[in-house]
Length: 326
Image (cartoon, one colour):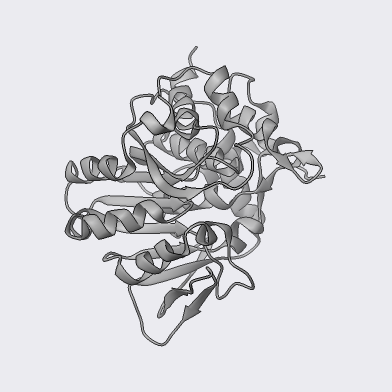
């Protein structure tokens, strides 16, 4: 059983922004379908927006779920945090989910307020990317990708100059470093897209491998959240081993990515590995190679993962600013 230390001063300090600066402009590219850490990452992103650290420009989904409710789940969470007007797009021809529908997307759609349509009827992800990027200053947008790289492949193929002009950095939760023993899920969803992105993306890329989230668990913090919180509901519904994700938490892969997008690789938490490039084969296997340097890095956790896990847990469970006084 995991023990949580209610050291409020320390926890509050850890969750605070590291520097006073303009909010980071973020587009979140998510496979809001199978795993509930996508819901958790969107919660963390909204908590960071409540702290004034980020501006969420748009959310796009990259995985076609049989529930047809991925966009609705996104909108439910954003609405809970008072941001129901954030543009949402869906990938109509991207990676498909094998097996049954999401354990939580349809429930969030049916149980919580939102005004999203079914995924098939939502704006296309590529068009949402175009509109969001064109409206921003050059070199100002950070993209956080936590699923299939299908949308990113479509974007860089269709609008390479727009990407080059507007995107400051791309962060990708995918693969494993320095190498994987078998294809990681996000890469396996669309290996060809991963090859395209690593070879053709024109701005800096920060890779976060599977091993990062695998070293930490979050979700149990939501046991104290109100039942009206849809992120709590997502973790209640997501099976994890013989339990539910809310019971003891689960690996927090996607939560770490949005924190990196907002705050960068803070020295107290991260080691950055440079001088190389990510390489993917047609099966989705990943390896960091140093045969030549590209504008790419990957991160490792510095010190004990518990420190970073606590920061993510505090942000995950933080009540929406829009509801604090109600």
